[in-house]
Image (cartoon, rainbow, N blue to C red):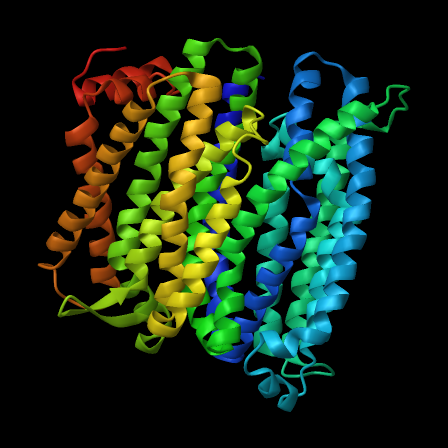
Length: 537
């Protein structure tokens, strides 16, 4: 099966399943808030973020190994694949023990991370014990399962895991809802029971993934005399050193927000913000499935394609990323608060009063996370190309700058504007580093196109997207009303307006024509050309 066909299959299977899972995730969150409250919700968000930081111990080994697998897969060199996977397994076993050790060391200091720690002691909840459960789940993944998934990713057979993973996740969500509704502190605390269920299903999912990899790639069990040389291991470790900085940057941007809010404000605020973040992450993950599905194809293009083809793919995927993330970012920014109010109530809506140059206004978290979603789309697009091109060490100190900007602004802004400060810090970090420095290194090292041309094009894309937001907000302002019907109408208006603006501005451009060439099937391509009234490229 071709890589294009695999990409299409990955996208279709992952997105259909993801939509169903999103619905169930919101159902679980609703029941969780109604039964346990904001503080417990904040605790789960905090522990998840702590584990994200601890997972930095893998130093980006997965990405480095997957990159090394592309060439032997193209050459059908099974012995080389087996040798790399064995090395991966040994290194991941060590990493699992490092994570477990770090988790045990952090547990006694939770009192200083959670501002209202005494509240949980009064409720009879041992927060340290819950953290150690999360630590065991993460460490066990490294010990037994994670390394086998890399071969599936490198072969671009992600859809094999996707269907199984979503089935398990859906069952897990249903069981979580049942436990939250019916447990009623039977023998142990309801929150503990819920946490055990979540962790148990993660372990089950990892086990299923490992067995699936064994089934589809049985040759991994063969013995081979091929060894990875010391020089090759040094090269991999050098790549990991650079990747560690990128992962550290991602952890600071995504994982320190809840930790900072917990330490500087309280867990209830973490819980309220986590509802916004749930919307953001579900949309982001849905879009990431599309980006992940083409990752191995980009790696293949680098290994086998010519320079002009790499340039074409880069520009086309850049344009597609703008369209994809823009169509979701604008509605999120416009109707995000409206969704929160319908879902959980007005008390869960976050709006921060701000005075600037004598003008007062409410800073909407929904608008900010809409901007963040758009920027993270660009950042992830660049990351996919950077990783697929093997550009791990170049500009390796960029992540340090990004992390410093984010962390500094988070600490400075939270006392003044609360949750909005954490999102603004993330936006600033993406704008000043990822979206500026990453394309420079990719263009200079691989593509050799005009850097000024790239930035000028993306500024136009951003300006048009901002225009789509303003127009959507303006139109929705005339459709006044409350309730789910008006929310749906507002959402539809945002999507249609954004698509309309994009088509008016870009419908007849070379970028659009290039994008249409990637559509599957000649009939679909011809229909698209006919609708847009443009000639084939």
